[in-house]
Length: 316
Image: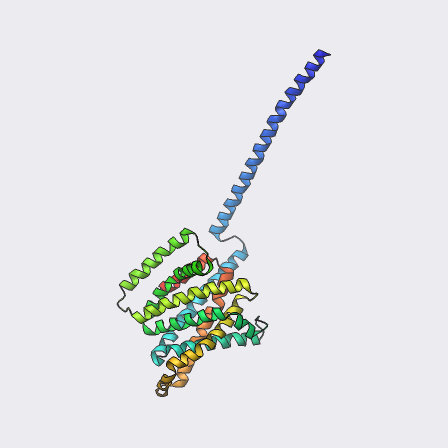
């Protein structure tokens, strides 16, 4: 009996050793399999990012984004050309800014009237977007003043600093600190703007100061718009339309107070031609800002949007 017990104990011990080794081997194999799957998925993701995807939907997305980029550039070019002609002819940047906002307000309200998705109550939407409207109004009038006072290229070079102001306002107002590489990426932009301004023979102090003020209002508008969209159920195009309507209402008394006494200058001009140019400048301004400014954020990564914003400024 004693020999039998010893034999059974030895057999049990011998069987436990392989079972333990097999368990350890199974664990190592499972871990290796998980790592292999993770590596394979990572390589597939890298391949998709490099190739832009192999499906027809990826191609359609790239074509759609390319169409938005091309349309945005084209409309922006037309706006700059017509806007400069209007300012040279009329020389009333406050009233021109107001007229362009009125065209944008009409564009939004007519679109909502013919069935485009819009707010259930326009007055409530405008009231809710009032802070954004104030920033939108300030950004619009200071940009037009800058474009009228100096060269268009000068204004766009200075306004390439918009991402810097947006980051600063976002940190001050919302308390959001971005990663250090994001701020570091702005250093070449700041340096390039400084060099361009220092070597620009057409430097105009009014144009420069107005463009810098426009950057501040642009940063405020971006931060306030983000806060509004997070707080309300408005869509981005609805917010843009409501803010444009509010901005037109805010700027109306200010524009006529500043330049109302100069309306007699229009007596010596072809008023029909001037009115058409102002209407077209307002239409191009609204069309290139309204759909692109928000559809791009639904279809394009924010980093790509920032890069295109800066490249658009340097292109001018």
